Image (cartoon, rainbow, N blue to C red; front, side, top):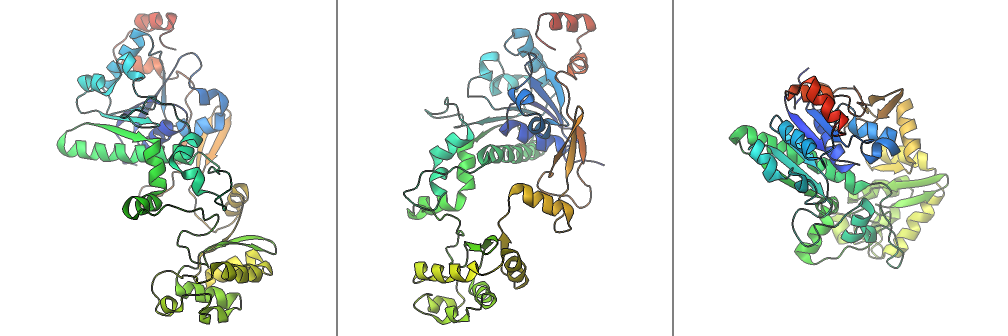
Length: 400
């Protein structure tokens, strides 16, 4: 099979999540990705989160080289002459100290696509700051958008959502730059930041403030539309999230709950908009309407309501834990999740795929994790180094 990025060579000098996720997408789409790590143990996740490291880095070649030594940095520059893409996710200026900035590699390969993933971007007073996912969530207002009460403490998203978004944006921007390069021969320096990714994750809210000055309010587990039927309700056997946003959906919701009178109650609903089928449902007395719905749901089974509402065209889902959801769909035929398996030594690491599928040429379903430095010798031989030169570099601790 021919994968979309076959023939593309990527140098991946990144670590932890964001950069490795970007290059993971490129690798699984067919690119040859060369992961560069320090020879004295590799990057931090290799030794602290083995399954997570394998899921992000399987299918890549491994070159263990110390760029802090001039000989090591020179090897990377030589390798860059053969590469299409270079990825780094250190603080701005870090790799430049070793002669591996965009300008340095552009001198070696004028049409290279060079991607810098960072916390705050390559420009501005904050560009030199370090960043982690929860810190960026705090900075950008994401923490203050989560939670139910305006006076409650900030609440972070429970997983590194910004890191993952940076990796996805990195992969997208790199592939777009490669497409343009193919058309006109021009390389690019791609600047992707965690701040930019956080703002994209909050895109509708960001736009509302920038355009209309509308500051976001905490909505807890209610839906984005503000419809009283888009909320999360406690049922007799758990919680149920519903999205009865339109008048037709809200009407179906009230019929399932045996509350048809709600759709005629002008004290609770904006009936002019409701009966005109215009836009989303709007409440006149949101607090009272919420109490009515909460009382009705409290007597229902979440599982039964999930089935009944979806059968009537109302999106609804019983609240599950991640492990509960994955176990459920693995054992049934509800979803087609193209699971991918990676071999990391004696451990087989399972993932839920890349987030999309191709119909005509399926993506690879298996890959292995390279041991640290597994491909060093082969890659340096490709650069023209003989066994004696390689042995000297190994003895000096430049490579492994």
